[in-house]
Amino acid sequence: MNSLSRLFYIVYFLSLNKQAKATELAEKLEVSTRTIYRDIDTLSGLGFPVYSQNGRGGGLRLLDNHHVPSTFVSGEEQDQILIALQNLAATNLKEASPLVNKMSSLFNKSPEPLMAIDFSSWGREEESIAIKVITKAKIASKCVRFSYTNSKNEQTIREVMPNKLFFKKNAWYLVGYCCLKKSTRLFKLKRITEVVISERMLDETLLVKEYQPNYAYIYVEFIVKDSLYQRLREELRGIEETELIGDGMIKVKTLQPEGDWLIHYLLSFGSTIEVLHPKEIREEIKKELTKLNQLYF
Image 1: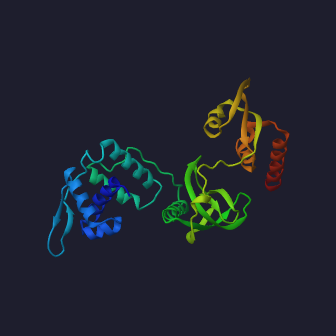
Image 2: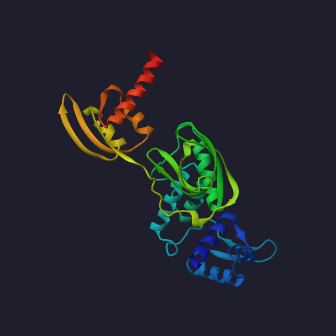
Image 3: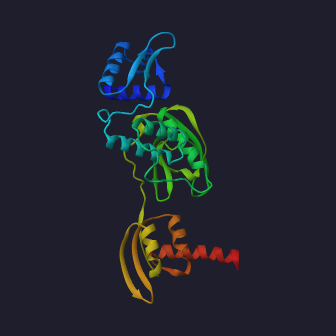
């Protein structure tokens, strides 16, 4: 830990715990007590009201209602720290909210965020629980074990070395090295249940810096009501060509990843859309419509 990180830790620790002995801080930071006292002198020189209280129950303390001087962390850096913590709290990681309040007090700033960001789903707690467990596992350099149900409704138990959590297109995903498949995989958090931290340690050499799913892509051409084009623009990337063809219809050509999701997505437009190409997509849609016809008629 460098000197700046050490100074920041001392200030935060004293703010949280009211006081501490130099020997306690030295043990936590793995430095000598002499180094701690030098750090205290540095903090005093920067404007922090740190003092030493002698006698029984004494130790290093910060005066009440203190704030971080701008010479230590600039106002812009303080804002960046608070925004990062507020965004973390938005993921429903409960430990982040008290930290936001503590750091806001330390920086003498309002804890009210400029933006209200809520990634959680209505009435769903599973994703928040999974995010919390995966985050703790990553910090502890351990794997997570969970039950995973894929798009074909096949259920398996996975043990995964967590690499990254990211939010994309209305869903949370975990990228990590899957010990079962012996490769880096992408997991949708909505399909994860019974997640726990396992005893297996994380191997950083198996984690990739950047992960790009290896999808096969296909060109799809269809006509759709022009009143629905805005929905297409919001929901689909890869639209390459559009052409107004009259009667309130528009022709669209787009490049999309192959998969069952594409069939179901196109079906969600009902009778307002007609797929022209490729033939394989038209046939798959016919099969789905036949199944629906058998169910309801």
